[in-house]
Image 1: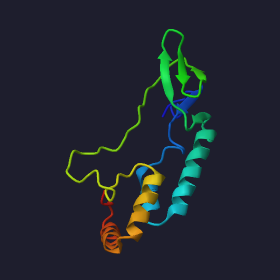
Image 2: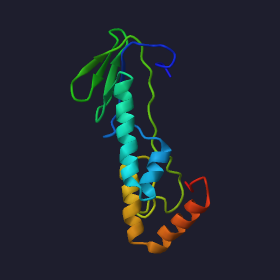
Image 3: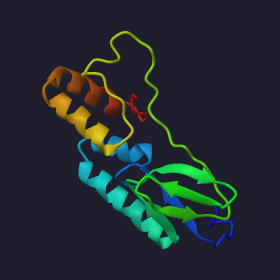
Image 4: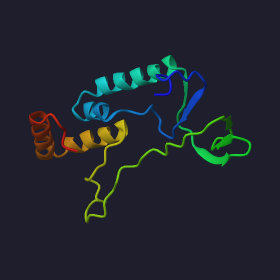
Length: 144
């Protein structure tokens, strides 16, 4: 949005994730067996960051801010200087306090790694996977 509005200054996105942020549709491609398409989507996203002159720092974490000096300390010991700072603290999947939610066969979906774990679990439970496949193909909205 900043680039579309004409901002041409430096933008750095710091993420603890191993890959660029993905849209939910890309995660669903990973679940539906179209993992290759999800990877292509991730590569396209990465290209988008480069095309828009956005420095994407992956597997990195901000550990401290010095607002007076306008710097962010990184976990690896590095420092980033900034003129303005937007904190988009990301999101972890909501894990509701429901009995059984902590079981190994209950999943959340936020990353391609999560999608891979769900697909792998589905291989050992064909009935559950079949239900997912039928329900998601019958609906334009995925069941998540």
